Amino acid sequence: MAAINGKTVRLLALAGVALAAWVAGTGTGQAPPPAAATRPGPRASTRFDLPGVGATLLKPFEVFRPQVIQDKQLVGYIDWSAKKIVAVGRSVQAGAGPAAALLARRGAATIALRNATARSVGVRIGINGRIDALKNGTLVVQALVKDFKVTRTYSRRIGGRTWWYAEVHVPMFGIKGVAAKLFDDQLQAHRVLARQWRRAVWVAAAKAELIAGDVLVIDARGLGYNASMYPLVLGGGQILIDMETVPKATAVDHGLCAYGTTKLNFGELQSLYAAPPSRVELAAGAAPAWQNVDGIGLDRLLLAQAAAAPKPPATGPATRATTRPRRKSRRRAVRAIRATGKDKSVLVVADKDALKLLKDPAAAGLARGGRVLVVVDAAAAGVEGRLHPRPEGRALEIASRLR
Image 1 (cartoon, rainbow, N blue to C red):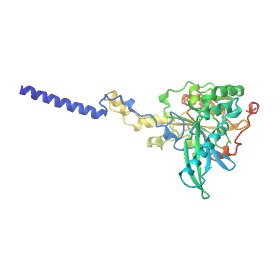
Image 2: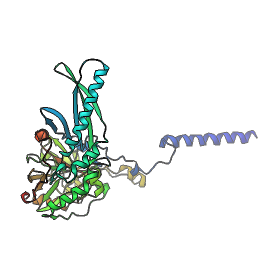
Image 3: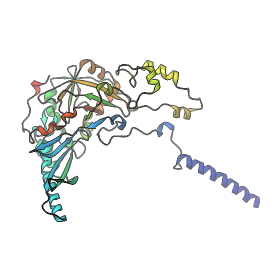
Image 4: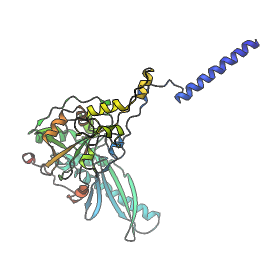
């Protein structure tokens, strides 16, 4: 019996060691997944509403958030990067103490809620103008905004007096956004104005894993371009990007693009690697940004990598999976040559660049996925503030003016 007990103890000890090694290797006590499945995807940006775009690629860009000024006072701003409308109300605190502060906060909140409708209907929705130029646009926004609450309250000391500020954030997109209520009406108005152009035919989009984290950048600086919720991009006399380029669900949830500013020149925008080039890339040399991989000609890159990279040992599928190089996210950049339309809300791309875009499967996938960043002038950040707070409530007859 003692021998049996000793054998049992040894078996239990061996089993315990095996179990401990298994748990330590996995961290969860579950079988480890294949090596390829453990790779994390690109981290999303918190400043830009561009799902699927890696935050590293967006680091060189700043948010585009023009202020709205009325009677020399800040009444809100339009965050074209996070895609939201912010209405601001302010109220001076009369007296000292918690009661006076509470009264001032309530006053600021009331004014912010009142301003929310005015700021929202003044947003440019597309080539047909602003939201209040759309049939029933103002009524729809009024019904939407009335259920919103104050998002943020803060105070500032100005001229020896305490002013309280309140902000109301109205999302442009999403279930509770403006687009969800106005998309169908805006699509009808857009089709009337856009029917003068042919719709371009894109090549089949690249697979999702081949463009993971990537973004298509359109450089619109120096053109006086005005941002809108549903922009129109032309090239070669054809429509490249508009409301019908992406699925309706994407257009309603996130729109077609985000807007930002940057100090990078266009050549640096075309640098498809977000990180500095490696020694292999520097040895291979530079090549035009189009039809290349990470800024280098594909043939030269493959030759350089074949000469420099050691061959992985043939020890089975698991080893090959772990030694496979990680794909880096890329920026694909194109420059707009003109902003047209009555309020310069239409972008035009050169014919040769439009042809390259249409033949690029990666660009097709990014355009159809709404993963587009339009770069505008930082100096334009105050342009919304010079607009009338309540734009005219009539349809803009601009179809004949667009070229």
